[in-house]
Every structure is written in C-alpha cells, then in structure tokens.
Amino acid sequence: MFLDESGDHSLAKIDEQFPVFCLAGCIFDETEYQIKSNEAINNFKIKYFNNTEIILHSREIRKCESPFNILLNQNVKKDFYNSLNNLISDLPFTIIASVISKQKLKEQYTDPANPYALSLEFIMERFLFFLEENNDIGYISVESRDSRSNTNLLATFTNTINYDSLCGDNIILAKRFQGKIQKMIFITKQQNENGHQIADLVAYPTAKFGLYPEKANSSFEIIKPKFRNRNGNIMGYGLKFFPKEKMGPGHSQSPSH
Image (cartoon, rainbow, N blue to C red; front, side):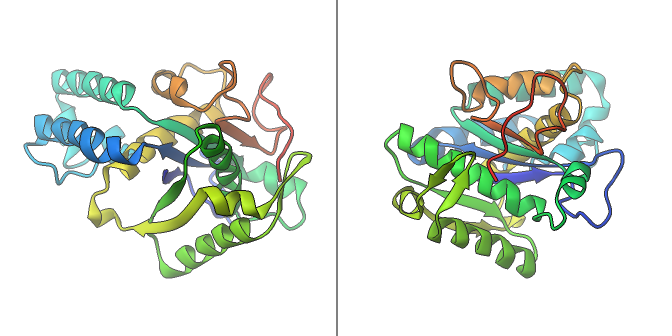
C-alpha cells in the first residue's frame, strides 16, 4: 500500500480554503505492480514527456507548472487528461483513504491527535481487514519527509502493531496486525516511485469530496469504483470521514478512534 496526502496536517494554523487533511492509500498486488502497472505508468510518461523521470504531481498538473506547462495547450491538456483518466481506471488497485476535518477535530477534542497519525491508524485498520478478506499479507510504503515526521509516523505504526486498538465498538488485537502487516518503509520523492504518484493523484479529489460531498467532482467519480467497499458502499469501508459530524448529509458514521 502506497501512501500520499493532500492538505496540511498541522492543527496550529488551518487554511480556511482547505481545512482538511486527506491520507490516501493505494493497494497493489506487488508482482502485478512490478511487471504491469509500472510499465503502464511509464508508458504514459513516455507518451507525453519522452522519458520516465517525470514525477506525476497533482498540484503541478492542476497549475500547469513545469514540466506540465505542456497543458497550457488546450488540445494537449484534453488528450492528457483523457489518457490519465484511462490509466487510473485501468490500473488494478484498491483505495483506502481518510479525510480529517481539522477544525472539527480541534473543536471536539481537548487534546486532538495529529491528523496524519490519526489517518494512519484508520487506514491501517482497513488495510488489515482488506488483507484478511484476501488471505494475504502486505506492507506500507510512505513518502519520506523530514526525520522528525518520519520518526513520529513510525511510532504510530509501531504502536498500532504492538498494542490492541479500538475500532468503533470492537477491539482489534495486536496479533492480527502482526500477522498481516509486515513493515513500513520510507521512499524519497527522488526515487520516483510510481505507486506514490498514483496515491498523490488520488488524494486531492478525495479531499475535495470530503470538503464538498454534494458538488460535482469528475476526478473523484473516476476513482470511486476503486475504493474498498461493502455492497457498493465505500463509507467506513474504503473511505473514512472524521469527525463524523463534518461531511454533509448522508455521510456520517461512527468514529473508530
């Protein structure tokens, strides 16, 4: 599972225009990813940039910043987005994501957890369930940040693995995590790991859906079928909103932390 985020996880100063933090995980079968998915993503890069060293980054694409200034040409932009949508649709992966309303979190909890750590716990719980459902084992790949952030994130991972946790009204025994989630690794952006770039492209439209669940969101509609779900329902299974009061009518759920 490759993780990437959209938005700032700090609670000290909240951007009124984007007051959410989204952590998105994209789960690939490792063998299929190495053989087929990487090739498909690299072919997409070659088609538009003639090399595979380009790092697909949601913000730079949206703003047509170099090297994505080719998108200032409207014909190229239309073709690029059609190809990108087809690529995302065709890639075989499953999404588990968390969207945290930072202002609500501060209002409802006197000592709120860091949104990144909180999101990781939510996602690890659902990753565990996914692995149990598929009788498989897995690991988590995170894009490396500064050493302090990496240390804090690894501490959250270690605590989740080593101690029983509460998910809704149910206790998840630590040994369940230990039997299914092997490790967490850190990859730098310069290593150009395609899975992280897909997670980055998934995170922004998911965050926007969290902010405005009733607004049209064509990018989210592309990825929606890929969320872990139960009978077509993604809420609580593949997508976690927290706190529950935040996200519009019809989207509430019991907290799992």
